[in-house]
Length: 114
Length: 109
Image (cartoon, rainbow over all chains, first blue to last red; front, side, top):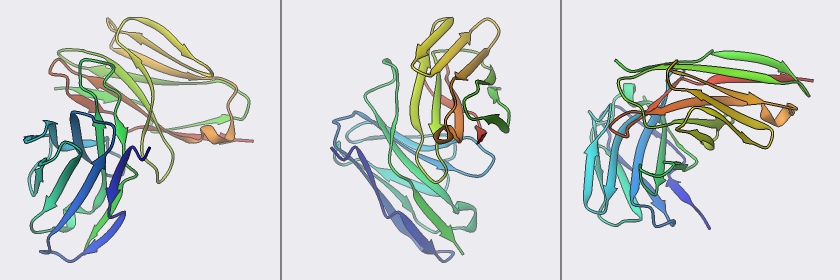
């Protein structure tokens, strides 16, 4: 059972380039999330989805777009990368928010924007 | 606003006990979580408290006082593998998660 899988694990971009991070989960979870983690700060929610075909903005959505065309996949796009987007990105999934709300995380994607 | 405070770093000795405190300020509350994150890895779930009191799970216990906006994670019989960051997270009235910056725990032999 793979759980939550993110690709790619590492990426280096030049300012202005675009890219997509892919997240896949095989636990049939309804909720999926994209977070970024920066040194000295808590995880910050970028976008999330409460089901197939739905997405919503989190705390820091600017510069990112997402899509949830299939229940098991949640894509995070950077249209025009900026150095401020250098970070570690984590995808997570959960059954919902009215149970214990436990999140299951992918291994993370380290993005560097030069 | 909503805020979480936890110490940035703590040091403890192998075999000892350590308590990591967390305080939060929020206008609503739907639960408090603790996650463990080893360096370079993803966070993993440790505990969930929604009612006041102590929840024990093996060597780890988590305590919650909603009236005081306070929680702690207690780790007993520390092992070297417990060296990690411990993230305090609360769920607000809108079921949104608010993450603390984490406490880096260093275990010394």
